[in-house]
Amino acid sequence: MQSLGGIRSWPATWRTTTASMTTTTTESVRKVAQVLTVAGSDSGAGAGIQADIKVCAARGVYCASVITAVTAQNTRGVQSVHLLPPDFVSEQLKSVLSDFEVDVVKTGMLPSPEIVEVLLQNLSEYPVRGRVALVVDPVMVSTSGHVLAGSSILSIFRERLLPLADIITPNVKEASALLGGVRIQTVAEMRSAAKSLHQMGPRFVLVKGGDLPDSSDSVDVYFDGNEFHELHSPRIATRNTHGTGCTLASCIAAELAKGSNMLSAVKVAKRFVDSALNYSKDIVIGSGMQGPFDHFLSLKDPQSYRQSTFKPDDLFLYAVTDSRMNKKWNRSIVDAVKAAIEGGATIIQLREKEAETREFLEEAKSCVDICRSNGVCLLINDRIDIAIACDADGVHVGQSDMPVDLVRSLLGPDKIIGVSCKTQEQAHQAWKDGADYIGSGGVFPTNTKANNRTIGLDGLREVCKASKLPVVAIGGIGISNAESVMRIGEPNLKGVAVVSALFDQECVLTQAKKLHKTLTESKREH
Ligand SMILES: Cc1ncc(COP(=O)(O)OP(=O)(O)O)c(N)n1
Ligand SMILES: Cc1nc(C(=O)O)sc1CCOP(=O)(O)O
Ligand SMILES: [Mg+2]
Image (cartoon, rainbow, N blue to C red; front, side, top):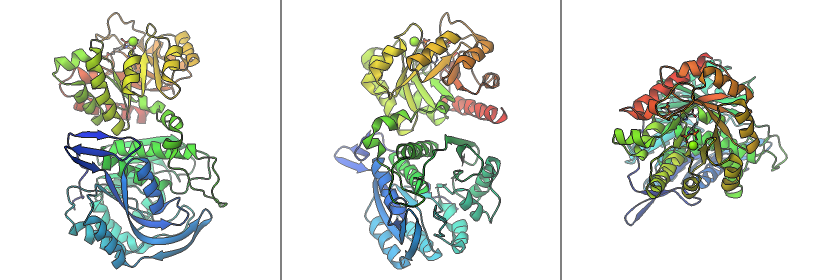
């Protein structure tokens, strides 16, 4: 079976993602990114249709809604459920699909096989194939334990809906139910479940491990049919977790509607949920065991949201551009950055030593747009002025560049600052001055940076041991030796930063993919 298969590539037109709707303009037409959610109503408004609409609004995307059931629920649980007649669900679907240019359909509570049937019928009736992406959140049990879709829907899910999905986002209980009750209690079992679910036909699978026992992190497993990605985040101690599943799936849908690729959409969505949980961890709404959280954190407290967007794990595959290399291979900075991200780069630094200011600024602005829509942070090397002017996520400075404390006072608290350190004293100072991470090298000799002192693996180990900040290794690193770097096994060594291994190459995408694979394998082994 084919998926709806339509993660649309946007036309090369102007696009903006701000507090308002995300739009593209082609001459006089302004197209708004649109999600259709097909789900149940939650009278407490923490989950279901209400959460979906709030998430899309918070992410700058329009959200139409088709209601499948009305639940009477609050923070104490689900008191009652009223299914809408399938014919009326069908009426709603026809109203929206015949009129709106929906980019992504997201499904939540589909409480009966008859309702799944009318959804499938409508999706095949309207000429959406090739345009619409389908995000399926196979909601079965509420967070309070109430059954929202019984076992009677399992066969139509497995046989008809899942094969059409671009991504499915079950939690471990739902994954287990879809797989006939298999045991899923470890990350290894989540991986195996993701693989089995992928065989049912969805293009991507995200098994959410929030309910996994005995783990200090919340780990989700993403599988694209070839590779696994483990997405870790610290558990947030709060009662306000009602609606996290709906929020995650809707945020994935919103990011896809704006044009993201799947992995980036998933990463952005996970960060959004973490930031919202963290922001709302102390709010009190309702008197029950499970409260809702606040989806509009970015409007109320942009700093808390922006600050938490940098995670040490973002240093995993750090791509640093080089103007000479891009010229040599006849590619623009923008193309180089796009390819690096597509290949798996987790953070980008523009290191354009010879660039003219005006031209560099324009290119940096384009790169900010690309990175932001892919959920990847973009830093500028040395040039604080350019970083401010293009609203980059931060800067990287060395020991002879502007001092970190001064950079911090110029950029404010929410920007990322990285500092190059070769010694333990420098590492300590970087922390005192308010840096976010350390770049340490040259681990091996390099031709990219003239007269660079090589500190070797021993020097890197020393810096890591002294550093309270996460560290990324740099200098002469590539596919052949990345594993030996990560093998030093210091817990705060989070990844490698590379220039020539990606950019002094014919195909940036291929090299980035290979390096990402090498790093993923070495992470698994150590
Ligand atoms: C991640 C990372 N680490 C180190 C450096 C080197 O910065 P610096 O010492 O300022 O040297 P230049 O890059 O400016 O030549 C870096 N750029 N990135
Ligand atoms: C920019 C930079 N900084 C270094 C440091 O030691 O701080 S080494 C370096 C160049 C890294 O390039 P490549 O990956 O091509 O060796
Ligand atoms: Mg510098």
